[in-house]
Length: 498
Ligand code: ZN
Image (cartoon, rainbow, N blue to C red; front, side, top):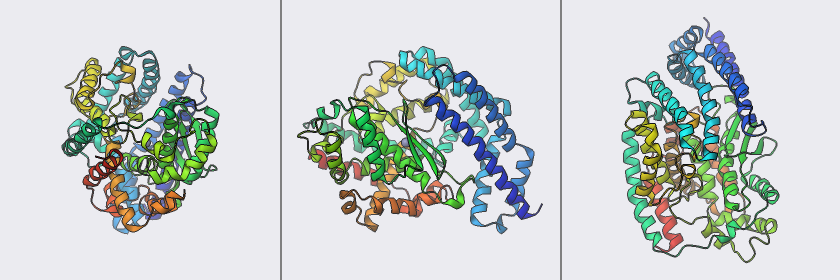
């Protein structure tokens, strides 16, 4: 085989995989937006068939030979082609170990579980979800063995979301985090809390839709390339760097919920939209890892979106959209309200300070589920016990407890820690960004260019061309969680006058 011919074959393979991915994503998008409620069955069959085809295309002997050949020629390859080969070879070695039938059964099981989870959550019925959760845990335990049988199963799963991360590492990271967060939360509990009642006046959906449009404009999201939809749970879906979709959920009695969803998902979208054109339709086209992705969404949501300069900048427009609701409320009061730190039940609504504790609960449970030391039926009890221990609160029901998140129903075990890692990465990026530029003068005027440009140049444009740890090192040096604890301590000490 000639090198040119092999590279051409590689591009053809990647293009087909892009097409399968795009088709599956479109079906998913349909299922959570406009599809009627009882239509999951046929879609599940289509998704299963697509997954089987994709698996057959990728996990076949021909692909193995192509990747082996390119690997043998790696000294002659350009950097980008070397990385494409490396990444695909890693996936190939893992995926080709999963039998095709088992893989397509898994895809169908996920589709079914996700459907049942929605109903179980709605009806507050963990028993309904239990057999499906059990199935997905079993699959993931088996897959962990396929991914890397030399690792503990949960380590192999963690590695899928953030390469190189292990339980040993996370145990240390979370312990250090708890050590600095818990005393802060305790000190804050002795202080007077800000008024948040105005966040819960009636904010009509139609006005909130206009506000979302304005926020997207401030974030620099081009509506021609980034759509916004409405779903039960907000998410971002990327087709390519010219077509990204975000979603939100409007609650008329809570302005902050959708506001910060839009900014969070907007951060994910900006990452995908900024990835270089020359990486499109290759395996390097997407954001590099869950941790780096969450660092971007949480950077916009918390570090920028919950900062006083940003709120001051958008406040005049907020007052014009919600004049009655915000009457007599200043930007400073709004800033304090959206930064109120208080232990609560729901992860996605948690403040920046208590948020990592929600992640730690899930992490502890996943560790036990995957190692087999916790039975599925005991998940609610363990969940409630950990919420009491870490956050000091009682969980009234499973809907607000272990059924609240969609991740497990999607078969994603090992994902949650990425949120906490992402927050920590973001704090380190902020420190370097502030060293390089004055970002806050612009932000105060509603001009986020200095932030966007820095993130695009240092992180976004690379897509998956660099590995997660290279991206971070390249942007702001070796990972040091100390930036995160310092950031949280300073921010909350200032907010609460500690
Ligand atoms: Zn996110």
